[in-house]
Image (cartoon, rainbow, N blue to C red; front, side):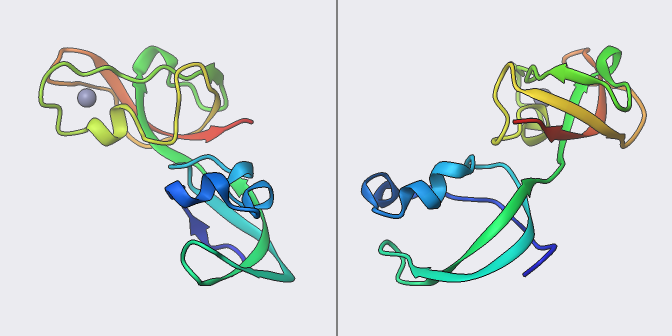
Length: 132
Ligand SMILES: [Zn+2]
């Protein structure tokens, strides 16, 4: 569906699948993608047996925490995950599964105020767009 967001999951069967090149090879696991267009062509997925449509996608923004000094709307930064050493309740935001260290990301939105986390880091919740 146009406008829908999905997060690709790569199964172990995908590696040897003949559709790999037009399927999971073009997307990154864990990154949310927005469907821009749905093509007529469909394939049956050998791993799940479900019918897959060919779609055009763009990465959708990812909610994350960044160091407050980097939290400038519109800025393009090299992404650095927040490495937490204690039981951080925000682990998913400190190091979102789809982002890797060094990724170029644009800060598209500041979601809240800067605060000090339990490890005494000054962090700000933002929306990041992965620039591939
Ligand atoms: Zn954390």
